[in-house]
Length: 161
Image (cartoon, rainbow, N blue to C red; front, top):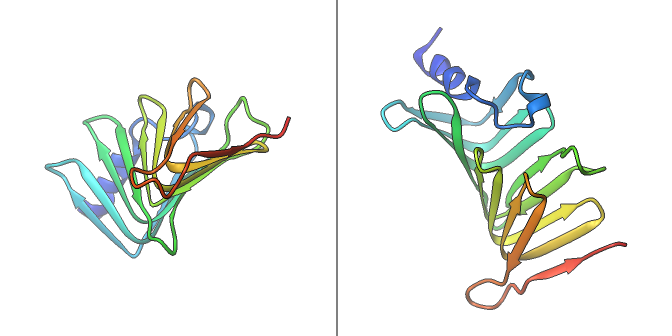
């Protein structure tokens, strides 16, 4: 087994980046290029990169996984203006998938926090939220959105009762 493949498996096989019920599911990674920096514990996937595990799916032009010795602690997905980064995951307290997109998505796995920056948009059930930035607290089912610093992307939401 090549060293790069082994490192990918080690980085991804730590604690899961998905729901507890998905932890036993295999992790599938696809990209045009993979760069593994063992010293910094960062793996970078470039070129229409995607990561899936059970009901978790993340797509972007560039995806970086940051790990400590045992687990993935942070994921950064960088999209483009034409193709923003995309996050989708089933949540136990929601009847539909949570879907989000932004120019940059940061997923802090231990805190269960998804931070969207730049043309941020999130759909939760039948409700949608958008703005310059958006934070989705998975554990507490909380959404915070605000306008962009230049004021061009105001915070907006649509709620269906």
